Image (cartoon, rainbow, N blue to C red; front, side, top):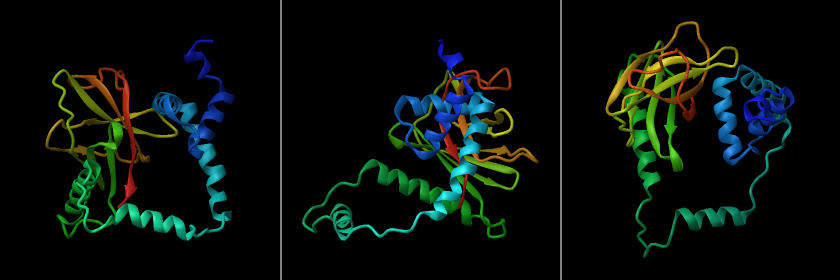
Length: 218
């Protein structure tokens, strides 16, 4: 059976959505399902079903304290001997940059409403590419990584469980850009597709979906 027909099987979609929510869907299968979330309403609805069904179970799980040996191992990893001076890894530097950007946005305007929503869009090996902040009906986006592509544009989409992807605009390949957030439209899942220069000509993703992220309250 061709792959596109197999993924229209409701039972398979439900199974994949359940494993995706639980975190047991990995590797290429997870990548394919994340692409499916953008293009197929049934996949988004299946994921919402599992979220609503399984999320209450978290409250039934008792809190457990890690064994002492776990804390000791973590301590050895994050606090090496004083005579060693390891170079900070690139991801630590990237995390510091992202944190600085988000804190700058948070406090740049004292009169701004509290609790903005933020997201970091990451590439391969968790490399941060864009920082995103939603404040009211505005979406501020700042390029963080090497994303220059003169022959293509990166388009940002808002993915809803009840409707298809909605374009939020083109992402900056350098610097910052302010985009408009659609009124009366809910959703936190973001997707980035690779499109022709100027964006998708159809109003829907036409190129590959490269990255996914989710807005969270800061």
